[in-house]
Amino acid sequence: MKPTRVRMTHSLVMNYGLYKKMEIYRAKPATKREMTQFHSDDYIEFLSKVTPNNMNMYQKEQAKYTVGDDCPIFDGLFDYCAISAGGSMEGAARLSRDKCDIAINWAGGLHHAKKGEASGFCYVNDIVLGILELLRYHQRVLYIDIDVHHGDGVEEAFYTTDRVLTVSFHKYGEFFPGTGDLRDMGSGKGKRYACNFPLREGITDENYKRIFEPVINQVMESYRPGAIVLQCGTDSLSGDKLGCLNLSMRGHANCIRFVKSFNLPLLLLGGGGYTMRNVSRAWAYETGLAAGYELGADLPVNEYYDYFGPDYKLDVRASNMEDRNSVEYLERIKNVVMEHLREIGGPPGIQMSDPPRMPHDDEDGNEKEDEENPDDRKPQRLWDRRVQRNDEFSDSEDEGEGGRKHRASARTNGDVEMSTVAKESTPGQGTTQGTASTSIGNQATSSDAEDGGAAVGDGTSVVDSGGPTASGTVSALAPGANVGTVVGVLAAGASAEVGRMDRDGDVKMDE
Image (tube, rainbow, N blue to C red; front, side, top):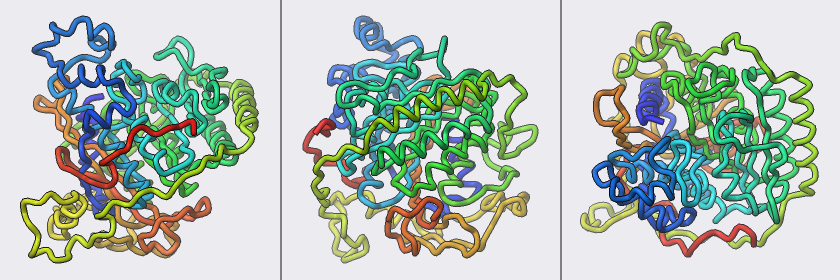
């Protein structure tokens, strides 16, 4: 879970030139108050106070909150949690306020954290916080988890509500966290709104696709969500240090491609992944897919170039490990899951009011600029319009679609100039071109030994895959109508006011 892997991803995204297709924003780190929308007050207070220097004073609390073993205390722990959670909440807020159609926070996806307990390298559950943000504007939210581990923290948070349907494809058995049985389907109002697909070791791309697409199709038909959150843990890739599945990079990315085809507001999050060069390869490739671009196979020269030897390719291949998931086993599990989904009996209906608009939603960031008081705080969105200028991102010889050395390997369809409005789609490409917004948070951990320096991570991107005329409007299109805009978020510590402020309290999921 080292932030280096997110920095490596960001480096590839920038050096492939994807920033030209994206609007760059900064996510505001989550506050204590925002975190306690899900987590207990005393747990968040503990995380904000404990450090390696005073941890001996908190022995009792460490045992209570299961911090110390697989969730060690390190310098900058609370800042790390705030940045990760803030990125996911910011992405959700931008989706809900029609600022984009796809939001990406590769520093998020920490699906094991519980209300008052750390677990599995996860301290604060940014996914739950992001979903709560989406529930302020959407009746129903679908959560999909393709990490090798069961998404237990998210499932537990929404186990008794029908406003969130959780679907997890994971290794099951004598494997962390030991939950996610086929029979775990939710309870109370949430009965049948938790869906688990237990897998055995070594599943291949073909078999994963065989189960993933029919199940998600049935979910969409039965549940009809208003927004989707997809946790893209890469420990399901072949060769992961802690994983035991056998997906290739393209097999993993096919899940993103398929979910994107439904053209619903989509929040893409990171998650597990412990072979860093493969994590960054997969997430960079999937960022390209979200933006509607197939990246070239030859990696551009970047500051982490030596990590990707000896082939220096944008690829993670499957191995020849045995697939213990027989067709018969997968079909049997799939049939049970599909039957449970059919029994949902249509989506739940609740009365929703129009979301409140913020005073700055319709502001013109350039209006009366000379008359502005420099001491007045303005929404970060308005500052970002100034920060993001054409002359601020200049191409070097090794940037762009693979750089000078690899330019021929990337698929290009003409230059796309930077703009804060959507760009027209290229005729005949069949994929999305547009503006993008990426959120990248700086994270520091004492465990980042491989870098030999401070761990500063880059984290969230947001992608807008908008309306049928690529005019910057956001609308739900028929599956396969890939036309739109792309958005992402950059840097930490800055304020980005997009509707994450002045909350009136927790979301009531059972209404």
